[in-house]
Image (cartoon, rainbow, N blue to C red; front, side):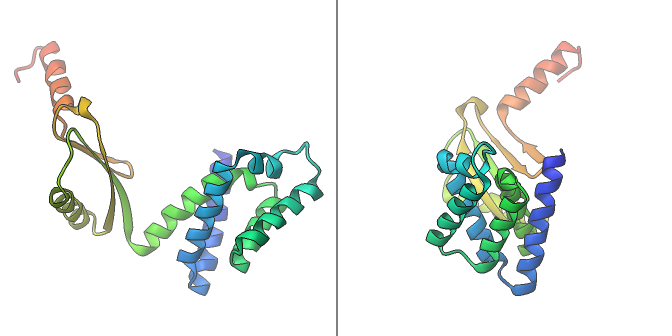
Length: 183
């Protein structure tokens, strides 16, 4: 919990800087790219966060990587600050919080749509449009298939789950029958 609070604080600080200088989207892309690099390259991640390695050597590795990536001055300073404060290990969480905060700032909500069968692009667009009207936000949908749903769809927007799957309806019906209720 404490780690998440720390990550949220760093993400908010970077977002405030982005709002001030109008570079929110650039920082979003750079932070996400660096976070993905750290996730993909486990040896680099270990070289930067493992306290068994000399701090000076770890900092030189980070500086060399930053020089190759040619990120903005603010992002370089931000990543060096994370290193100085021993917070590089929180980078994935910081990135997640930053992405969510930047989405909020733009009025964007991310949602997942899981269907039993493949949906047409028109159907997906209708669902996206409907969700957008209901939330008042621009919806970015991630679509997936899960044949275990039998039929219908399950949509998630943040904590809200809209479950219209036949599997869930059958499970609810079974529970009603167990309790002796009429269906």
